[in-house]
Each structure stands twice: as structure tokens, then as C-alpha cells.
Image (cartoon, rainbow, N blue to C red; front, side):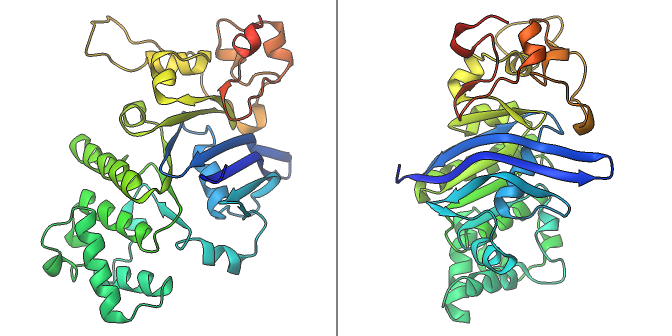
Length: 322
């Protein structure tokens, strides 16, 4: 168990409103080991990003962690005050967000931002921190780093800016990186480069990575295990090959069926009917039951749960029938 970097247990995130409490993340349990990439996938509104924000301690009020625990290499980090969380973010947990321009200050040279981050999380002087910044820029694949280190963010392409953000996330050699849709704003060829870079850095450094995305192609090419989320709950968790080739939950089956195949011709891609329920209208039982053509009475009555592995479906759990 010593190689478990992130251990999330029974996490629930709530938003109190005038009309009642909305549950954005409901009883999520997952683990990520050293050197492993866990892909968290699902439609918009599934709770993927909210889970990442809870781990980072960046929930916007009135959002709150109402239940569960988050451990980083054995240390419990949920419930810490802002000062303690600031010491963890950047140093022990790195973050990569969808739009690199939200992570980079347009008024400062990228080198200054890297040097400042390195010095914040280490005892290095300015010259040593600049040398470290140059090394990081080389490591993430930026050419001519001696000239480019003094450029401003707007002087880099989108893919190069995202590489700078990855370098920022690596400044303090964190144990965990939370990457929230890091390739969505990039074209396909640059997406492949960024995901390959994340995969290489994970393997070489032994960093644990939580990759949040809605792109099943990125999932199939990049991650070791997959957590499929639906309506704030885990629908299925397992090795990427099992999820891609042998999905068990009807929602996962639908996601995989919506991906075009180069091996065979199909007249029409599979479509999942309906849409993700609103937080104030999540149905009883399995949240997916209104969209599932295999749902039975038990699916509408009882919530299926999994503890970090398997499919949260009564048809899959212990061979039971709905």
C-alpha cells in the first residue's frame, strides 16, 4: 500500500442552495499509485472536474466536502486551512488546466513565472532557479530555450503554452498531478504530443496523474486505468483495456459505441438517448436508469455502488439481474 499516492474514500461534494442541497459528487472512492495515470471520463456535468477541484482544495463556496476523506501519500489533506493547502498545492500536487492562458500571467515572461514558482517551493537562488527552469523547458520539449525563456505567453503557440504549464506543474516535483482537460483546446496533432509528454514524464518521474477528460481517444492512448463517472457517481472503474474492449456498465458501453472505428464500416454511430440529469433532478436508484434500455425495477429503486473497481450496475454486480 506504500505506493498509493492518492486515496479518495467516499467523497461527497455538496452545494447548499435555497431550494435544498445539490450533490455534485456522490460517494466517490478511487486510488492512484505511483507512476500510474488514472483517466476520469464522462459527459459534461458528470462531476469529473468537481472531483479534481475537491482534491486540489479549490472548491468555490458554497461548495463543500460533506463526506469522505482525501489522503496524499498517507497524509489526510481534506479539511486543511487555506495556508496549509497553499503549501501542498504546487509542492506536492501540480495542476494542469484546460486553457493555459488561465494559468500563465500575460504580463510576465514565462521564465520569470517558472523561476518564481521554483523559488517558492525550494531554497534555490535566482541563478540556480533559472538554470532549473531552462532544464524543465527542455524536458517538456520547447526548442531554443535560452532565447524563448524571456518570451511572454502570447509569443508561444497553444501547444507550447501548454508545455510551459506542464513545466510549471513539475517545478516542485509533485507526487500527484491533476490534469483537467489539458488537450481540449488543442488540435489533434498537438493533443497527441501533449498526451505522449504526460505519459513519458509520468513513467520517468514516477508521478501519479489524474487525467480528467471527455475524450475516449485520449483515454485509450494514455491512461493505465479508467474511472467512468455519471451524474456525480462512479459508473465503472477498471484497467483501460477492459473498459475499452469489455465494458460492463451500459453507460460505458454507450460511450464506447459512440466512437468511430477504422476497422469496420458502420452506417450510424451508436447514440445514448436522453441527457445527463440536472443536479436537482437525479432519479432514484441508478442515475442512468431513464436512459438504459436494460433497466429493471431494482435499478429504479436501489443505488448500485462500487468500491474503486468494477461496474456500478445491478446486471454486472455478482451476476444479479435487474
